[in-house]
Length: 529
Image (cartoon, rainbow, N blue to C red; front, side):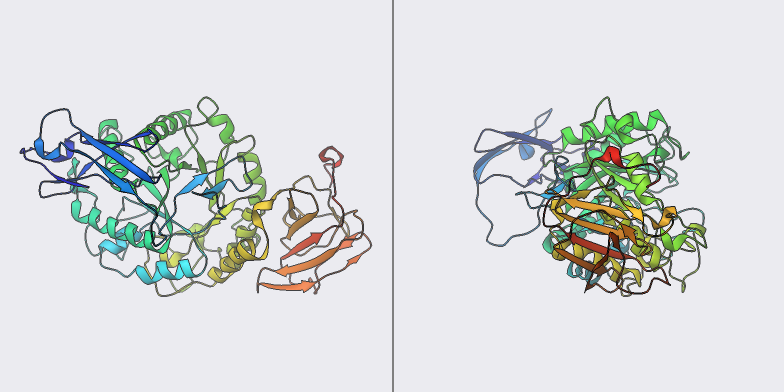
């Protein structure tokens, strides 16, 4: 809805303009409106029920142009558009679309997609391609910094993407750059048409201005900023998640470490965002430090944060980056006792050898790390979001896909088409033993079991054989995560091993279907196993 004010305002961005909507069942939803230039105010709302709704605007003073009330009829849409994402932590994987369809998240990281679009760079074909390839979520931040230390300068920028008026040198935090926000509108609307969602990161890394200067970017300015974002984008179905800050432990001064102060900020702001928004989007934090566990961090207000966008890169050295080892253990430790939902949202950005190395920590992150990291995350019961240097930040090369993308497509197809993913949950206590000798940590399989304990999926990061004492299986199948192909399997006594030579330590997935349920006692699993 659009309104035209009749009064003159020195700063219309400060006008407290709200609208209350009443559903046919008497439910009330109140949300802020926003100023969009040339004397126009707008209210964006997506009704969640069919029938006759009513609305009434709210102002702290009189302005006939902004005072309005009325009714409208909501009917079933002829063409299905985007869908809102919801958390369902009581169910496996923890996420579903409105209407109850379970969601396996497969995402990509394009922090600067809004900025690239504002610079006139192509983005539509890239988003179409991701949707075609089975992706459903994109990590993107609304504020775009001109650089990312130590050398991650955004060389694609050819105009300012500063979202406020003024400049980083002389910011005006009480006024917004409408030209930039109109570009963001276009990207959000296009994604909604594709039925593709964004993790909308409200505040970027806390080491970037203004989020590292809390004596300048005061809580009052922060509230104006977040209120404006919610007013403009809460109604979009392409807003899948509101993430408060990227690596929120940078709060309040850009010093990356765990502090209780950061937790209290997240709880306060998270609760406020949920109260202000009218469309029940999940509110998330994205972590830097992995411990203490999030259940401990947020125990005093567990409903303020719905979703952990979890980060752990696993091993990334010259000799062990290909293994992406340690991810499963980090997820298990950090999410121990957490009753909300989670997504494995970051584990490094795949290196493009043709580009200058701007962030040394990316040096050894090749396609093997992309693949194994994704499978380790998924076998921890979480959706997965990858990332590539081509489109992660400093570079914008949208026409080229890096090698690891095909591995993520295979993973997405496996969980989206090959297996009934929502039936599976982690089975870390499954009593597995190395078939020969003992396992190195990186060799240890990760397991999922269905609700009936009759079907098991096991991910073997290095293809090492294992033993499991079960009756004769009904079916043994091996899935190759490198090529997306199935092969028939068999066992040798209690031993299970991949169908081909293991000299190169390729990873494999075993699908094991049993005739009868296999009940295992977690207490029987020894530390040695």
